[in-house]
Amino acid sequence: MNLSDKDLNLFVVFDVIYTERNLTKAGEVLGITQPAVSNALSRLRKNFNDELFVRTSKGMLPTPVAQNMVKDIRQALDLIRNSISESESFNPKTAQITFRISIGDTSEYRLLPELIKNISKSAPEVGIESYLTPRSETPKELAAGNIDFAIDPPIHTDLSLKHEMIYEDHYVLVVNKKHPMAKRKKISLDEYLNLSHLHISKRPSGLGHVDMTLQRLGLTRRIALRAQHYLVAPYVMDQSDLAITTIKSFTSGRDFKILKLPFDIDPLVLHLYWHGNKDQDPANKWMRDLIFTTYGRIQRKKK
Image (tube, rainbow, N blue to C red; front, side):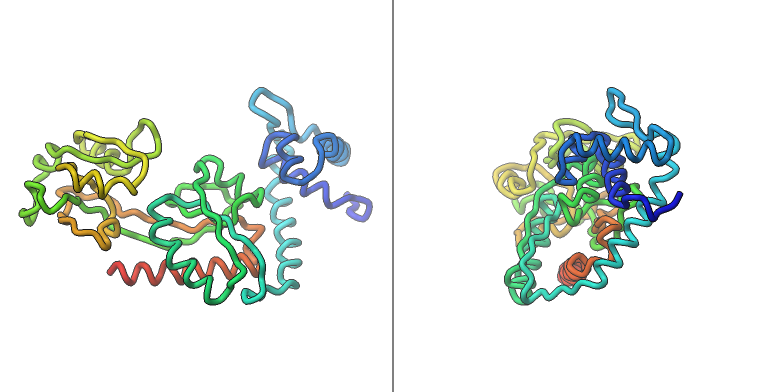
């Protein structure tokens, strides 16, 4: 194929169609009309002598030819974007930019106060927007540029994403100071299972990390209250004998009794995710470094 007579913007359209699997959504991401996307796809099909994407009830599914092409096309686009980014400068003192972060409520509680304090000193015109993106949508949202970062456990497998561990915390059992177990130095497994537990989950059903760990041991505990947000947990525990199994940092600044769990459980590990096409972007790199530094300070305080 002779590139001199090809429109390289078509490869951008190819990448977005591959991500979105929908021509209308691809047009929204690209800022062009759906007919314009269809026209670009027709030109791509002619260039490669292949359908590339086939319309099905599940969206526009890539053909084997498209699947074989996508990795090389994305690498090439990343090289072009990175070359452009390297020629640009970023001055945090004068930059007027808003970064969007997908983050859960407990991570918000940990990160945002420290982060915004650092930003207000070094980058007074830089803003932050935080909201939780469904994990199944995170790779697409990062690819489309709808979010700049995501903070999640290491569960995303999309090869177009970059990530690095930023936080680790261990699980403990927490009760109020008036709880019958509050005077104990340790608790048995049977005693733990017989407690009335508070479980925090935004999903209406399904097992969380703690209950999946217990299930692998052939055990179950009694969930007396399943709530959506950690914000309510301290108030519930103050007014009841419910116990919560959560990360140790939850107790920071709160007068609760902490007990070691009577079973082994993997710690909470969080990674910072960003898309590969932003890896060399000066603004993205600056914010990544600031998030890494802020979480490092939080980790040291926790210890």
